[in-house]
Length: 167
Image: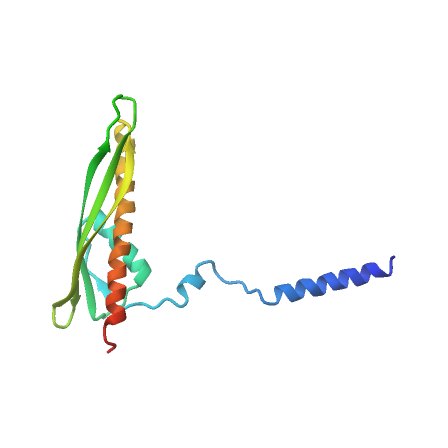
């Protein structure tokens, strides 16, 4: 019995080494960004907080190059509406935030607009009559709707860059 114990430990060590041989350590986000291609794109200056959120989302996903051929310019607006209101003053009210983005992709050397469009997204939130909480909920919904609309703009940009002739 004592003779098999060192053999079992050696076999376990060999099995562990074999299983871990294929594993590598790398930073958590390196795999997602290591093969990421930056597109030939730069961005206009944001005029509002919402536009800044949208530009940051697109810049993070598509990258940015200095001296790029194309420049993305956009304007964004948000509006809220009540979905339904409860009859009690103590109940929460359901609302919807809508963010609309109008964008233009401009070829920098000729100042020609090569792609333009408008996209929107919505996010719901609740209000309860508490001013600070209601404002925070509205800002969060605006942020979520802005990021969702930014993803739709990204899809348009990806389609454009996929179909554009390579230079």
